[in-house]
Length: 142
Image (cartoon, rainbow, N blue to C red):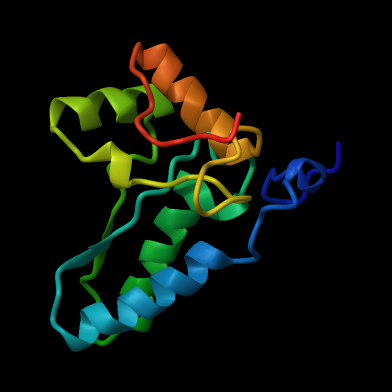
């Protein structure tokens, strides 16, 4: 196991990782938020089942929020992250309760028409539905 100084095991980061993806999106969203005088931006990262992506951790989001404070004229932009500390099954249960159209959501990294059912993201999604006692409404190849 090779941990860096931040405690991230780089040997466990899957090949589906897009370098600094959330950092890039948060930087752009932060610039737009400041321009539009918004009080905050929202991101749907989930630390527990993020497959080891370093930019899905609560610590990363908190640190980025501090950077927005320090790096913007407004200095008051919050990052809302309501899912970061939830399990996938809790997210599924809450979405069902709120009548979220889950058939319109997508997690697969391999396919576009039918989910593959085997990539990390599909497995996490399917397991979340299973633990929540719900059937996933999207179509899968397998």
